[in-house]
Amino acid sequence: MRAHRPTPEFPHHLALLYARFPFERSLADDPISVLRPLGRDRRRAEIAGVVGSTLAIGNTTAIRGAIGRLAGITDGDLARLVDPSWAAERSRRLASFRHRWIRGDQLDHLAEVLTDYYADRPSLETAFLGGWERGGFAAGLDALARTLRGSGRAPAGYRALFPSPLDASASPCKRLTLFLRWMVRTEYPDFGLWSRVPTGALCIPLDQHVHWIAYHLGLTSRRTRSWAAVEEVSEALRRIDPIDPTRYDFVLCHTGISGDCPKHRDLSVCGPCSVRPDCRLWQGRGIAV
Image (cartoon, rainbow, N blue to C red; front, side, top):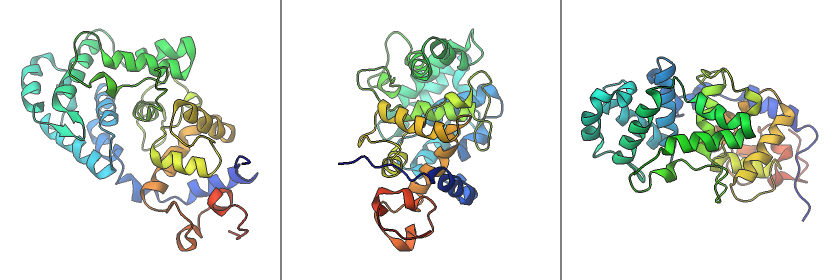
């Protein structure tokens, strides 16, 4: 079968989708709406970002609820997670925490890893840069994942929370790429606190919604999420906006989350969609936008 490709007008169609997107509606549903008030400075924003991206499993309501519960455990100050004097109380309070398959003892260990890291380094940007400067974005994610995995004994299932694109599984690493987007991009709602990683180097956080839409727009030919699919989609978006390819992530993701993309042909919903002419579901339908 011939590979599906978007129309030559796709960059214009995508720009219209972005320009018309109701950001305020979707910001309230996004996990970063809970994280931003917790990230009052660089250290707190990094901790909020790491914890929030780690918990980014399941629907957005459940994720925001899990972040809110963790904020309650720390009395609204996530920096307490890396306060050595609070370690015993942290373990006690986290003991009963659960979010999907993530447990409190795993988050307690993450806090211990971060405490050790921040003892002599100011930012996780240093960990990412150590790999990125040697081998590009995937190597940077690998270095960051290895940093967060820590060394020594860890709770069951802990290290699986931080996959690397260089692992044999070739994970799409959605949660770590999301963390990078939050830290690097300066455009709202992202934190934009890292200064040495250019936005043009970022790769798309490929969740199920972004992957479904990207596949049907012809940005990737891969039917399953993988690091290869991440690179295909990111490169396609980089050709449209080489300076900031992940600027479209929020719009594509929430187009799926909100139901603006019903994932089947429905003219009553798809009719106003700017990228409908590029969608494989409407290929050859010839209905003008």
